[in-house]
Length: 434
Image 1 (cartoon, rainbow, N blue to C red):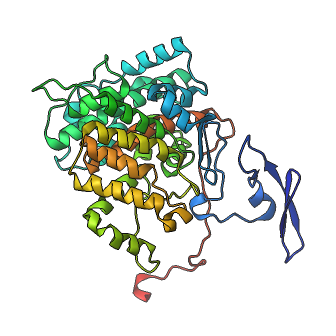
Image 2 (tube, one colour; image 1 turned 90 degrees about the vertical axis):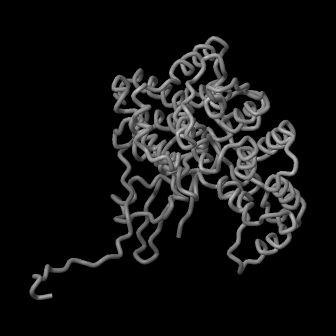
């Protein structure tokens, strides 16, 4: 029997009558947390929580999510306000430092990031060590991990200046790495960053410019890309962020920690959701097949699932999706895309999901992955690059969480426990007796 009594949670063993008092910690918003740090020492028991879905692994002041109400806050600011009024680098400053910058602070921050965007020239040879058909996420994992071999002057995690420099380098260089991974995969020459362009403009320029002709960045597309980066900048203690914190808890250098986060993000259950949307749309094929596949999605005995609808955390609506929906329609309008079967199919499916009683009752609204996949497709970004762009956006969240962990005096090396179900002690049997 468990009961909460003021700031104490009383845990009782009905079999023995023993009881223990566990402190209850209160956050600024959201549910209180039962402090089980002394549970094993006091009770000789562990907790069992596969996936850690009911376990608070750290204290954080960065991001807050209320899945039931559809709320996402960066340092207290609603995500829709930031996406509408801010820009990506200002949001980066907010996540790193906890407050929005004043004009002088923003100007210096933008200047510092802008002048860290180039990669060491020897990385050209590093890229060419990969096969041409290597997945861009494989390239990104390798190249980001290799940054620690080039930038020895920012590896001391106990030095605040070193941490700042490595943080800036990672935020600045990630778009360059992503664009070069893309260029390498299609056999085009690398395009160097330009200091006269904004963060999103520079990324699109490195992705799509060629030496053969001038490339002008479309303002609507760069605004959409900037919003995508903001909306994906952080998302509390998700799988990749938890991976970064776990790797960082061992004292690993920041470049290694972010490479670990990229590897975790690569999984289709995490960063591959928007890629899965395009795969689903390709399977449906045409608008004429929508009703057939919607019927399959409603059939609980059919394994088919509509990807890009609903969310594991958000039980109401994904607050990022409304902003992304607006950008999606702006991009499609700007590009004047007509007679594109896949995008026509996506828009028809969106209309059904927003109006069909089955989806509305279950709150299976289109989520951020549904719209971002469509935007990427419209811009001309291949599916293999979708998760790479996610990593570009999420880098600031990872590095902000890593910095917060390093500065937390209570942090320890991550060491989850287990429920052991293997053999008990047994004696070794010599080979000739088996």
